[in-house]
Length: 488
Image 1 (cartoon, helix red, strand yellow):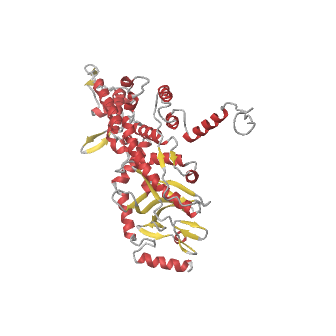
Image 2 (cartoon, helix red, strand yellow):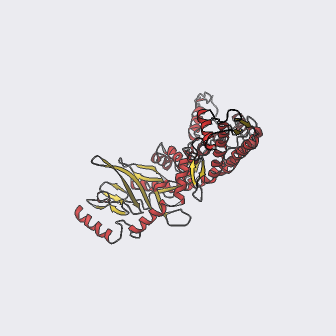
Image 3 (cartoon, one colour):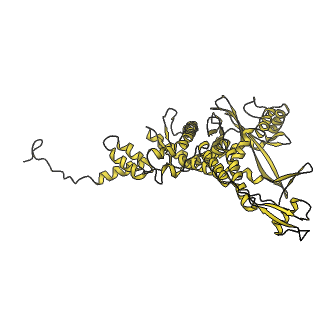
């Protein structure tokens, strides 16, 4: 079948209202409806808000000070309008990801051969990708890792932005994908003109098809969807197209309800930005002064304030009776400060961040006090850890499939344990003392795992084993004369 024949077949399928994909339950109208619903959804809106606030592009930047004149809202540009955006949300996300996901994962398995192959397949940058998924899911509620075979024929993964992914789930708990629609824009040049192209990918468990969305019409990319041997699938081995047997996208949820962290603190952070900005406005405009005008020849109070702020001068019509007096009422700075200090405490509590109140815990907290400081962050990270462990188990399906296809063995039933090593602030002296006091009570392996200076448990055990061999006392082998019995 030539390309022309394939194209004619595709056009007939499109005219019949069906996408040229392996799963014919997804027609073009369904795909376009899903795209439109997702683009207008609250879920996608919160993804963009989370990403924006992580970059400290808070809503305070869009604030305008206006007044109503003759029924219209007019901006008062002469008034102080400080826009103090605080990075407290960014700090919360950084704190969470650094605490749970920056230290290398510990992967345990009784089958050492499989463990070596697993680590080799995941690659040395896998921890970096896990960290990236942590940022993505924290800011957007969910993140996506796509499994694929690269140009060298090796297993690889890449993070796909969540705002580009429209999942179609098989179950209400969102555990297994039925299909995935990805929509994203690219830029192409037509002569000397630049044009933005909206690309659509429809992934099923049997393959993928590529489309261009133009004037709300899905137009197939024939050269991407077919080759000389027919329709493409997920990846190619030799001349044969193969599929994963599942949709090759793995979800990494921020929590069970797939909401970003910004959803729980945005109103508090906006109020904090506003109150601190208002305090700055008070200082800049000296709002504690009330002006009493006598013989003022201006048109209105707005013009008076503009001249005062811009020219630092006031025009008086009556030089004898005219003048300017001021009243200086006391501004309740204490109440304003208490307001934003309370907002700060609310942000720590509702955002489940580390409580850094040294007045309560002292300059070098340890033991119970340290655990209490991290209690909120621990709860938040526990939820993230559960979701990420489940996602890594899904990822292992694709790793095992790759190893099987490559002839490296079948490992479907291998039991793998994933351990997240948290980077909690500790009192090292106290922990080391406890480790030393635990010798003889618990195993050396447990002590090594909990020692603050140990970065890699397996490497440390190997070093200890080599060290113990070197330090063995010198033993000479004395020959035994006369066979068994005492030497004569």
